[in-house]
Amino acid sequence: MGIGWRGLNRMMERFKDNMEFTKLKLKMAGIDPDDVYSEVPYEKGFQFLWRIEREIGRPAFDEFLKKYIATFKFQSIDTETFLEFLKTNVPGIENKIDLHLWVEGTGIPPDAMEPDSATYKKICSLATEFK
Image (spheres, helix red, strand yellow):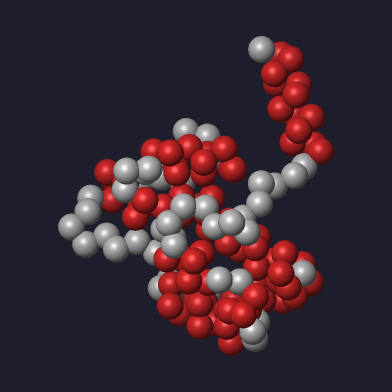
């Protein structure tokens, strides 16, 4: 299994016959988590948070994260609690990002982006040359 954008695309291919498992918010009743474990929650979750950061900017996103950590430290929360906290602390975000599509939609949302890093590209190039 890979990580990052390529890993996320591999997971989309893996679950092409049951795209339900590409959602961030799964309905797991009657499903063995070991049968559907994947990188989707991690990589799509990263993409979702990065989409929020791109929309509001890094300084505002950092402030949001500080509030989030201060509010929910040492506890687990569900998706609805996170979304309500997000909408309360980033007013109007639901008008800029399709939160429903990101959380309950299947596949990779159209406003997801492959991270672009000159350093990463150089490392990949060197790794290819090494092979």
